[in-house]
Image 1 (cartoon, rainbow, N blue to C red):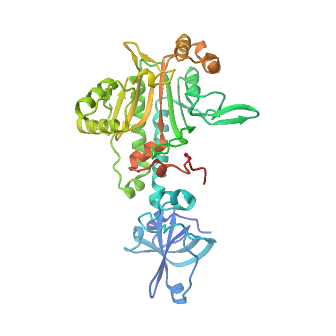
Image 2: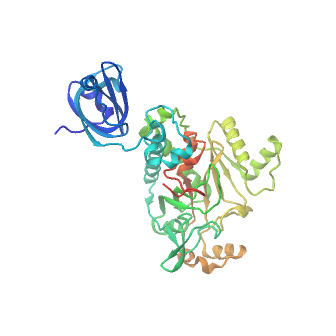
Image 3: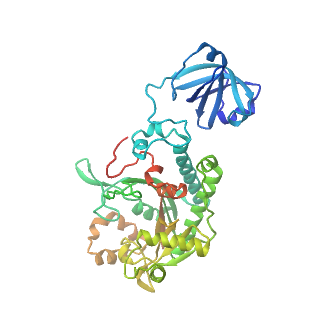
Length: 433
C-alpha cells in the first residue's frame, strides 16, 4: 500500500504515485475538467478530474473526508506547483451537513458568535486555525526557554480547599459532600515546590468566577506559570520572564511561520532588557501628558496602559514595557513589599502593546511575615494552614509570574476579542460547545 504523504510534500514527488487524505476543501467545475482541492494539516492540494468531469459525476459534498491515490504532475497553476492526476478517490466520511459558512473562501464569512457556536467545523478555516498553531508554538517556546534555565515542569491540582487569591471570584463545587473550589491559579503549589525543586513551571487551566462580559476576560484560560527561588528581588523574575517571552516569540517564527504569513503578522522582537518604569513615575508621566491625573489611584486604567504602551514604543522602540512597584493595596497578601517604600510592592506587570499581559513579582518567604500580612488584612491564618506549612520549614527568597496564553495570542495576532484565540471559550454566557 502506498504510504500517505501530506499536501505540502506533493512537489517533491513529481512523476510518482502517491496517496493523499484529508477534507474536500473545494470543488471547481469547468467545461472539460473538474478540480478538487484537498485540505490536510499541511495545506492544500489540487486534484484533476478529467474523466469524472466528462461523466458528470457529482461526487461528495465539501468537507467530506476523502482519500486519493494518483500521479503527481508539475503545474504552475496548482498550489505548490504540483497537482494530482489520474486519481482514484475513496470517500471515508460524507459530510451530512454544510459548514456554517464557506471554508474555502479566504475571508471568514461568519460572525464571532457563529464561529464559536460551530467551533468544531469553523476552526477548520485556515485563518481561524492559525492562531492556535501560533499558541501551540508559543507554549513550546515557553517550555524550551525554562527547560534551558533549569526549571522543572509540574502539574498541580485544579480542585482546592480554599481560594488562592480571594473568596469572591472562585467557582465552588461539591467535593464528596465537602465544599471545594476550582483553582484560580497554581500559586500556592508552585511556591511550595520552590522548596523542592527551586525552579518550577506549569502550563494548565485556571478558573476565575468574574462576571466580566468584556473582550479580554474569560472564566477559564490557560496560564503559563513559573516560580524560582534564591532571587535578590523582583528584577531577577523579570529577567527570567524576558527570556521566556523571547523564547515564545522565537518559537512562533520557527514553528508557526505559515500562520504568521497567512495572518500577515508582525512578531515583535523582544529586547534583551525590556524597558521598565515604576508605578509612581508612570502616574507622573500620565499626569503630565494625558490631561488626566491618576496619582493616588492604586491601579492603571486600560487607557493608561495603552498610553504607556505607545510611550514605550516611541521612546524605547519596544512593544513591551514593565511597570514595577504597584501599591501593596492592589497586590495579594503574599506579595513582598519594597523595604525602602513599604506602600509599594516588589511586583510588576508586563504590558504588551498597551495591555497587561503578565503579573508577577517577589513573594514573602518567611513564616512570620505571612502571619503578619494576613493579620493586617483581617484574614484567619487557619484558612491557609496547608499553604503556610511550607514556610514554617524554611523557604528561600523567591518570586514568579503568570502569562495568560490566550491574551498573549490575541495581542500577537491583533485579535479584537480574546475568544478568537480561545478553544471553546468559557465566559459569563457560554458553556458549550
